[in-house]
Image 1 (tube, rainbow, N blue to C red):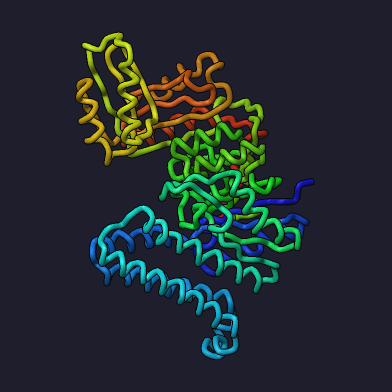
Image 2: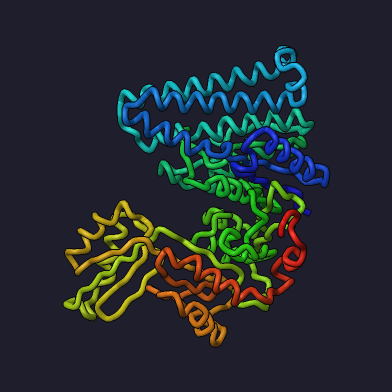
Amino acid sequence: MNRLVVMKFGGTSVEDAPAILRTARIVAGRVARGLQPVVVVSALAKVTDLLISAATTAARGDRATALAITERLRIRHCDTATQLALGPALREDPLAAVRKDEGLAATHAWMEAEFDGLEEVLRGLAVVGELTPRISDMIVSYGERVSSRMITEAFVRCGLKAEYVDARKCIVTDAQHGKAIPQDGPTEQRLKQHVVPHLAEGRVPVMGGFIGATEQGVTTTLGRGGSDFTAAVVGGGIDAGAIEIWTDVDGIMTADPRVCPDALRVKTISFEEAAELAYFGAKVLHPATILPAVKKNIPVFVLNSKNPESGGTRITALATHCKSPFKSIAVKKRLTIMDIVASRMLLSHGYLRAIFEVFDKHKCPIDMVSTSEVSVSLSLDSNEKLPAIAADLSKLADVKYEGRKALVCMVGEDIRGQNGIAARVFQTIRHVNLRMISQGASEINMSFMVEEDDAEEAVRSLHAEFFSDPDPEVFDVEAKRQPVAGSR
């Protein structure tokens, strides 16, 4: 039996001292079961956003505001460390408790040094006035650098044999700052060097997610949501038996519970289905999380750190047969539809290639494509690049675009092979105006574009139609039958 498990805890799972202690109990529970965890943690909730704000503010020359943000972060982390170290003693006699704890003084010392370093970077940025991707990565990396070390110390105080590992020594990436790509070979070698020996000695390695470094040691980040990616890369690199993504929801749901209060937990889903949902709006997983796990056929579990008893969602290579046609509905908002029309290019060889070369030039991904004899319609989520893209495309055709659109994505097993499924879907939402439709391009995905204001109504109607009689093998039907405490 493979006892190695990579456990990733997101920002809301480590947002404050009580959350971190809850995380420690979850890890201790895995150790008690004979498992060997590697823990990957995000920055404390909202810290990355504040670091980005500090960076952009400093780049505008507003040093005072940038440093004020840093001071808020310094105080928050020091206070959290104090609460973790002293707990109940703080309420009895705060000053005496702080004086007695020598370890806490050491913790505050290295924290002060980290934030002093951050302030120096921001002061220099305020003078230079140019926020390069490399400097941005350096600044936002502080969130995970501080949280991972602080959480390691908290684990040790809770009785775990935890060991801090700087993720930048393990995750080797290219130099694509802001969205760096881990390099499999060098990363596996570094993991064997810096992580595997701790596991062999029965220790629990703790490292920050989201961050890495080039071969030359320059700090990089993997993009927003990259802590999930880190967990999968580590899991693949050490050949783990499982990867656990701990967040603040019970798993992948049949729809957003804020839109559909009767949404169900999906107990099992395939890698391919989960990746589709992640890309098309589901916030539980980062899309790239799936890739390293798929390569090594490692199951991924999505679990709730605030409700660890919940079974979560198991993501595996092959889909479990489901009597229901769909597993889940996702929505991606703030999209734009671009229409490209050129009657003179009718049946012209190379026309589509010329169009897509423009999007390649601007590094702009496309969500959906629909074509006719003389026109091409596309959906995009990169609004800042639209004017430049339209200017280049206008050399080929007439171009117009409309914003405030939403893409509704329905994911399930073998949708393409089910007779009458499209008719049933579109009959259900006949009161909603559809702008684009994609069915048949994928066996597991049916998607369509609507006005953003109509998206939630479309999801509610579809959920009521397709999840009224859910398959208990795939969905948590029991939870639906049990009233939630405090509900009316």
